[in-house]
Length: 297
Image 1: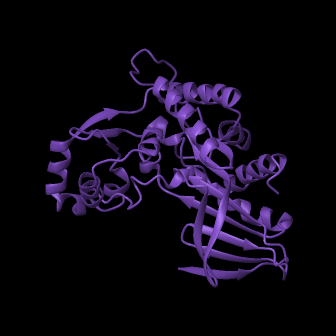
Image 2 (image 1 turned 45 degrees about the vertical axis):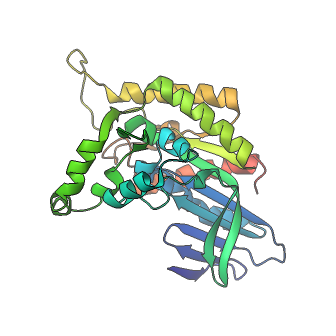
């Protein structure tokens, strides 16, 4: 389902869908630009680029936000390129309410399609936007027999506890068939992201942007770490530094959410990962600055 919205300028029209915004400048050119964001909720800020794009657009542009934090760990993205036993993956998708495309390599496709006013419209992936948030925070579970990894949080955490308790068969099956592997190590993050960026460069013509993450914990009052076993801000800082080094080696752009949020102020944040809505436009301006410098617009 989508709706059409007229902007202040008669020549610009916007179509807003469940997970996309389509902008048409009304010009005669058939140029199409696609911004494809894959990952966690921090990437929702990319939608705030829409009014900025409308000011400079000549042609049509679509912003698509695909996926959830639960299906955007780097190992889960990479395993979509592998052929897994179909019956096992179908059962996992059904049992744990995973997205239908959980095991499909849609990230690596050079284009995407959205419903337009007159039917499906295809856009090239001019920009692919990723985030390190899932690698930093999410726990994975490996299928004991087939070896694929899932993060069922996206399905189970988006429903009431009663819904989970009423489906104890799935919970039992999950325990029997999957083993916890925890969060991705820093070393595996570096290895996985190196593969991910290299593959995306070879399979698409997209410019690549990666969101880093806030390294401090809003509201934290810890002043002595002697008894703290897992200091999460330290882990996040290590990943942010590693991402910067990967950017130097592999030539991709970083959206420095850590710097932007600190300069903006984090008093309104409840945790490190959920940014206040008013910060979205600030991040969107940085995204636009980067992609304009890269010649996308």
